[in-house]
Amino acid sequence: MNPTTLTIGFSPCPNDCFIFDAMIHHKIDTEGLEFDVFMDDVETLNQKAFDNSLDITKLSYHAYAYITREYQLLNAGSALGNGCGPLLVSMSSDANYVITNLESKMSNITIAIPGTFTTASFLLGLAFPFAINTVEMRFSEIEDAVVRGEVDAGVIIHENRFTYQDKGLKKIIDLGEYWETLAIAPIPLGGIVIKRDFSEEMKQKVNRVIRRSVEYAFANPDASKVFVKLHSQTMHDDVIKKHIELYVNEYSLDLGDKGKRAVKLLFDKAQEMGLIEKIEEEIFLM
Image (tube, rainbow, N blue to C red; front, side):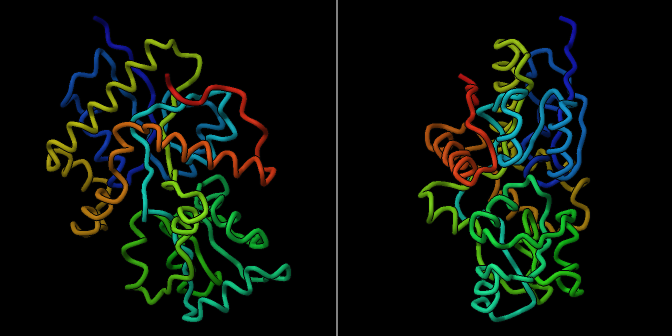
């Protein structure tokens, strides 16, 4: 059987490298599929998806709401969970002052965000509708920008959850907890989508391969260490371990009913806020 090569995008973060290592390095049966890998931060992946330039890609659930006509969501590979959402941080130790300011229509607080179409940015707008004075930055640059005083606060994601306190930053609010309290659901951070015009057979095959890759990673947690470390050179081993444990879980194997409900709730909120139109397509793989 001649292999079929598909382009796939995911981030260099430990959770994605952990999930995709087995399939892109043929440690599992890929059912004749080969993968041409593109790696970058999540907002770059969001833009790649908007350009329709990748066959399969990781992207923010917020971003996916705008391109449901072009892509369909796979059941495997997602990042959802509890206690894993973005944090709003500042050098100020007075959280109440910052929150009160953000709730004001006259708020002048500048906030660094990891991209307009990240779920983190959506949650900031959900919690603080008047927090419109935002500055886009690569997620890994936000902590230092806040420390240097270039912005008043920053929304941090990924491994920065484990490092911000070391730089003297203070948590203002856990935006993930805000969502979980509001929606009574896990927070949908990132999903894996495939071009909608692929055959149903191909979509199901890709989903099986990704799930098989996650299963292999869970069964052989050390197998991806070299690949993970290659793309996480500045991270300590304990941070890498915490990162993977936080973002790779049951929803990475299969969204299930609970995960799908969380995604639908996120899109419902986006519609209520006037950010997106009603989604007519079936977004989930059947």
